Image (cartoon, rainbow, N blue to C red; front, side, top):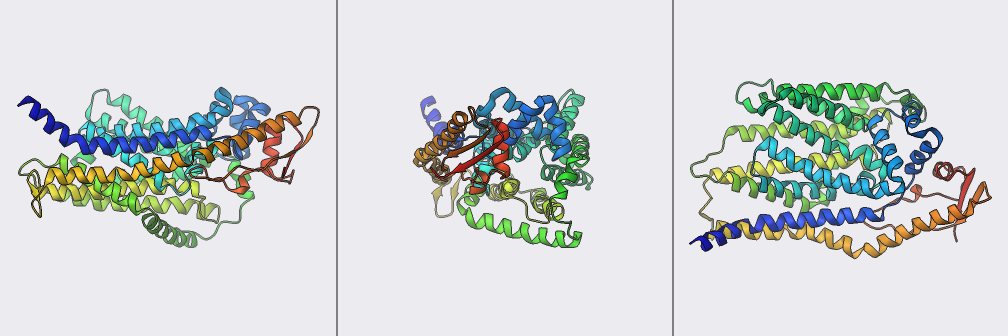
Length: 482
């Protein structure tokens, strides 16, 4: 009897385990790709500033000369100071690991679901966020871009953990302080990060003021207020930076607010539709996985669907729509142009979160209609149906891992090409202040797609050439075809 029970338990968890493992394999494959990353573009500018000003001097230099992204500047210069060029390999790996762990912790603390089911959602969700990112290289693997845009999701998930613990556990003052500090730091990574989290937290605080029936969210009000206050303080530091005027001087004049609002609505709708259209497998993966997890969680006999679940989905839709809008509005208003693709990883995070919520509502609806633990329509055993669904879904992340594996030779060739350039410049600069080297870039391959504008050129006055010249401590650099 014990052996039979053990086999049944193992069978019931086989599907979730396989899906979690397949998503983890894809995340490991992404992390493996980071080993082939090298400095590019702005990375050299940041590295050069350390040589010119030192770590302490680099912080006010960038704050006064370029932007108020104090957290991004501090993290990148710290990593380069401690690790040198190896920071371009380690930071993306830490970001991927942090995304997974922070998502798992947030799911556990906020939803209180079983840790194993939270593991399924965290692994699949983290993979889906990376796969759906419009430009994964610039958002995750590029040192400067990844630091400016990647950490927000990690820190906000940790802030959610702090808010939940402040509401339910002892020492609330400690967790409230943690929420405020995390809100302050995360706002300092980029202007878009500031706009998104201030908007999101303001709406969540407003949701806590709704009538009764939201007792659980209402209990989070104080923690959300602390996180919101920290975010406002961090955003104020970013906005007050003298470097903003320097950047603005190089940009077109502000359009009218009405024009920016209209464009933001249009582009956010087009982006959402495009993300769904180009990633149907991710849409199915997230919705079905979340539905299956919710189905397992709520399949207790006699459970019925609460209207609050649907109301939560509607409010979540309003929140997701507002955040998607804010992905575009700041850039359209301040830069008079759509945001660069690297910032739109926030859009993939928002969409994956909303798809997960929709799937959860579907799963609770099915559970409330007593389709478990009996049979699905057509007299198919529910356990067999769920097992088959989990196993089929596992093919999606495994396909991504297989694609990265197939491209590893090209990734290695790309890395060797960058290493060759470093060696040639290092050798040529001996006794020369104006260096000309023969070099051509390696192949552009997934997931490390770098545009031609990210490489040094035949123009010594090109800004990337100038950054690299400062980094290698020479007067000028010119790159010609070998």
